[in-house]
Image (cartoon, rainbow, N blue to C red; front, side, top):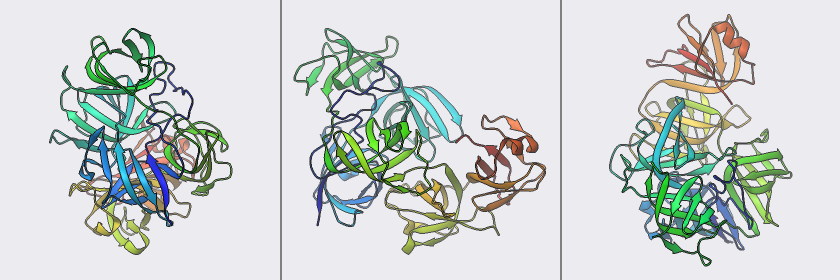
Amino acid sequence: MKKGFIFATLPAALTLALYGCGGDTTSDANTTSGIGGTGYISSGTITGFGSVFVNGVEFETDASSFDIEGITGTQGDLAIGMVVKVNGTINDDGITGTATSIVYDDDIQGPVSSLTSPSADKKQFTVLGTTVIADINTTSYDASTGTTFDFSTLADGNNVEVSGFYNASNQLIATRIELKNVTFDSNSEIELKGTIASLTGTDFMLNGVNIDASAAELSDLPNGLVDGAYVEAKGTYDSGSNTITASKVEGKDNSVEDTDEFELEGFVSNFTSLSDFKVNQIPVDASNAELSPSSLTLEDDMQIEVEGSIVNGKLIATELKLRSGEIKIKATVSAIDAANKTFTVSPVTGQPAITVHVGTETEMENDVLDTDSFSVNDLNPTTDYVEIEGYDNGDGTVFASGVKVKEASDIVVKGIIEAGTSTGTTIKVLGVTFSIAPGTSFKNSDDTSMTQAEFFNAVTLNQSLVKIEDKVTADGTADTIELESP
């Protein structure tokens, strides 16, 4: 039996006005188009192709239509990391289905400014007043200009399109960034969503940006421009006056109706208890939900997937799954078990291998071959160097939320410290023991240097998160050991 459903981007409002963490000037930055109705409703990012994989479901798309920001497109216009809307059916197995339509709409487009690097793996910047976080592993990068674009080339002045999810601090965690123009100028197109505030005539504020809509086409706004309406403004931007001259202002539906089956991906916010928190501003009660992993302790800013039903505007969850974690590994694949969808990596020769599980929700890419159509079957033992992000399954193995094949580089293992002392010669993380040598450097979470004694006085075994780097040519001896913030 097949179930009808609507698969959609994270709706951040029910049939009520929402508020963001940043106050009136940033409220509703994290709202998206409304969804609703009977049947199965779900949400998440594109994690793979062949068909289209979203939230662990493989959707056949032979008969599907594609809407790319209001323009008819094809499956070829989709990309890893896009947050999409899908209408169709899902099969009883829960992991396959058929799409009848897929819709993509970005979160924001505009100039990169105030770019900083809080860590080697993350970059933070603003786009039209919105804080965006990019990750070297979990953010996908693309360029419509034909220019090489990735984490390392992201720069102030780029005009970028961002898709992702908002966290508890109203920061946009990018799942995909597309370079639209290498250099933003007065003719570059921008897109900004938010709630109209301080309306005077055809001028208003949107997320702290001035909007001049005097010459704009108005769409899906039956009452015209009114304070409190959730809209998307398109046009050009002048940074000197912080003003968008809008060519179009379109009303967006930020509501969702009660439904029997609902699946939602996003970041936890407003966490009080398992029975009282939000995911992209949708209230959730997961007090009776099955947790995966079973040891999961929920808190703000965790990326999760929740399944259940919407009842009187609240998601009553039956299942709650962790979608990202603190574990990061960079190493060469040592073996694969395609039948069980696992592979192993061996960061240190002679030490136990780390077993990594992948699922249909795992985002897999091969940056060396530049392909998104990639699975565990395509991994090459002893030759493929991979970057893995995931979480502890609770059984000593890792479940991967993302796997990328990259050009070979340093060995990196990030996880909970299991063994080591202030005077010892070894440290153990994820079951792998690295040697400590006189030349090993120790760093605090703020990247300041520490002595070995200071480092081990600062950590707690089986609790503290640490990162070990064994630089090429790797020899099993830690070159750098760093205390990480959770």
